[in-house]
Each structure stands twice: as structure tokens, then as C-alpha cells.
Image (cartoon, rainbow, N blue to C red):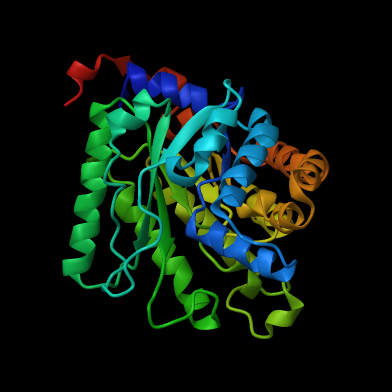
Length: 348
């Protein structure tokens, strides 16, 4: 395997983002529109008056309690500025670079960046890494996907110049189907595998791919009795995980995609048993979603109590699962000895 060239800045920041085992054990707290929606729903449920301060305070409390247990935390400056301030100083900071959501009136779910941000600006505010989310359907017309590929190249190149690791989250879709439907579940393995094959290419300069598991766990035979029809057996799901790993040419981690905590943990164990060489997680709602209702109903004290009991256990359980099933990020490049750390001016 050829030597992997990494600038000194990127290499040092990657070490800041990973735990002592070299694995990415990160907490995702950059939800914006979806968290506002959850807060509003809970406020109506409990007869409370919603305000944006609730969102800011929720992120602050979760960051303060759980960031010391995580190797990194993903936050946005727009709604998570208090969470950034509350983060443990020894925990890495990944900052969201994309606008939340997409323009539903424009075909293709095209991405866009926060207009007053840049890699350099975010680094100056303490970011150890950047993150963008891309919705991707490999069967969309070229005029849509060519824009997304160009977007990915610009993003990766900006991170390269700023010596800042780039996290690239890919969420697959097909506008013909509901994302939770059986029809889309049957398509999903192929879509996720093709997304990996595309964006793992060197030309994008992506440092960490944040991937979906290549199936919908609801439709694995025997996993959910209420699902009715299944789309794959557990052995097939393991095969998809191994194929995903085999396609990767750089570190990749799994996103929790809002599934229940026990399901996400089961997915990660399945990946380990399949021999998938994944390098960690960025776990969001699977870690803290139960705390939203409690926070709205019982205030900060109720949330703190839940986080110290259940939220903390969710994180420590994930850490144990990663220790047993994930591999260090540098193994994606053949090990630490196969990484050549160089001055940024020597990178082409």
C-alpha cells in the first residue's frame, strides 16, 4: 500500500478527534430543524410555551454532561453556540458547515453551505474538523449529481488548504418512496454501496465518511415482528456491511439515523461480526432523544438526572461496543507507520 500523505495539521486534529484506541467515539448534537420540531411537539404535549432558548439550553446541557465521555462532539454555531462553550476542552469539536435541510421546491435536494462560515473561520473558533451532509441518489440525473460531486470536491479542497479534517455525511434517498418504506429498504443497500464507491475516491479529499448502515434494520428478517414482510436476512445484511467496508479507501464511521439505542448497538455488533473495518460512530438521537421530552416537561434538572443515568450509559455502552468491534482510523491507511506526515506545502 502506498504511503498516505497527511499534513501535520490534519494529522494532529485527527488525533484530537479520536480516543486512546484511535477510534472515533463522537456525539452528534448538530440537529437543528429536526430538534426544533421535536421541542415544539413536546411543548404542545405538556402545555409549555416553546422558545428557541429551549433548543440552545438543551444542547448546552447535553454537551456539558456527555462531551467528557466522547472523543468529539458535532455542533452547529447557529443553535449550538452554548453547547460549544460548554464542551469539555479535551474533547474534539466538529462543526457543521451546511445549512439545515434543503429547498423542497428545487429538485435534487441540493446542498448549500452556511454563507457566513468558512473552514478558516471555523478553525479560528476552535473547530478540529468540519462536517457537511449530502443527500444522494446515485440514479438521479447527471445534472443533479454532477453538482453534488463538484460540491464535494470544493469542500474537500477547502479542508485540505485549512489542514482540517473533513467529515462527509451521506444520506441516500429516492423521491419515489418514503425513506421508511419496504420499497426503499430494498434499494438502500445498492444506494449506500454506490455512494461509498463514489465519495471514497481520492479526488474528493474527504477524510472521514459518515455512512448509513446499508439496510433498514426494520426489514431484516426476525428483527422487527411488526414489520410484516422482510427485505433481507441477517446474513445478507452482514454481507452488505462487509461490501461497504471493502469499498472504503479511507476511514468511515456510522451514523445512528435516529434508530432506537438498542437497534443502533445491534447494528454495530453486526458490523463487527461481519468483519467490517469501520472506525467509529457519530451518534446523535440514539444517544439523547429520550431526554427531549424530559427536558421540556421537567426542565434542566430532569434532563441532567436522565443524562447522568441513561444518557451516560448510552455513551459508555457505545464506547465498549466500539472497543470490541471498530478499528483505529489509521488502519484504513495500513497503520500509523504507513502515514507520512508532511508540511502542507508538500501536498499536491
